[in-house]
Length: 216
Image (cartoon, rainbow, N blue to C red; front, side, top):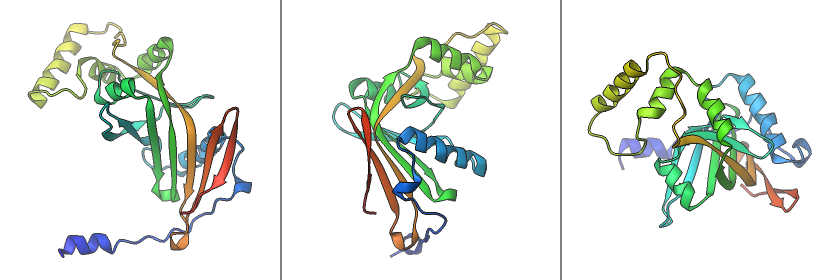
């Protein structure tokens, strides 16, 4: 066994910061998520809204990547991306997705399973208009997930568009916008000593939520 393999095997972290009981959580998962997100934002950790988005291809192959949460609405979780990207194509064929947040500084994780759907066009327009101009240009010129010849080509597309467009407002591309993930299962995980972690899961039961404790 190599030194690296031994080093990985020996990694240990005993979580002791907090605990999580049924009497501590809100009756609905979005309320509880907002409570935790407020604590995460106040902690000052980097990229608190970074989440893993997992999708599934038509053949059943999973795919995951990091995206940024941009809003928690009354219905669920909103993020923005290229609709023509790999994730966009997979969501089109299978709207079942999963989101995962991991805030190691607070020894917390949130797992969400639900259905993704495109949000209102106007809402996507409004968010696109709020982005920095260079980010808008990037969304316009990048054929996300497509094979490209070189980094230089991407830079040239960016510079060319910026020069031609000047100071004119940039319109949101039709193939770019937001998704809403409506949760069906939301699990809150709090690290605890001896790997006996606290796991509380919300399951949607028609018009209400059932809260259960899961074994770690």
